[in-house]
View (cartoon, rainbow, N blue to C red):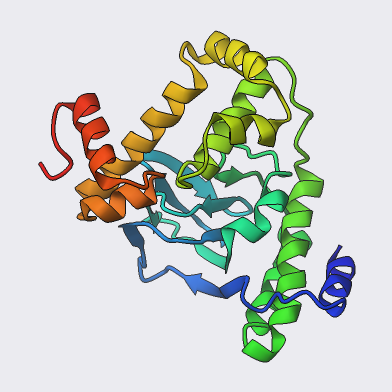
Length: 262
């Protein structure tokens, strides 16, 4: 996979701007991050120890060999276990460009925790990513990032969607794409390759609500998290898929009983 995608680079695609950074962090000093949000995607692979990852208020314990994924505009926090602090390695990359590869991975928990991978299988790729961070080596970082994602997809392939799996897949797409102003039910159906009627039937059967209502609620819940952490109303609206802050404010007040400012 690595050599296949390096050939794509050599064919002329401009890839230098799609990888932002890679590194390793030993958290024996109890280093933590958040709460906060980023505009790109980050994958952390746990080299040893364990810790906690909190995404939009939901808590996950992550241990050596597992990985956690931060997606754009999600409010997250993560910190090491006090008795067995983790050491992790990570890569940051442009969400849009690598989304098709992320979509091939079957996540172990929600759409943010990837299951156990032996260190010998994936750590060498992360080690080479850290070495490839100088600008002149970013073409190698691109191929290595694809190799990391390909390794996850090989070990945890996404099963074909049918029946209730269609609704589960829809939720995963919503959680990944909700922040885009042009993302709606038409785009959701296109991403899943299904019709509105089929999606509505499967979704309401499994979740008891329509996909449109779920999308709106997910956006408003994310907006509340951002507002509570000090984001402005305008920035929050744009971060959660609303082009018009005034329209967002009306929806938010109708749903919560309070204005975004309040």
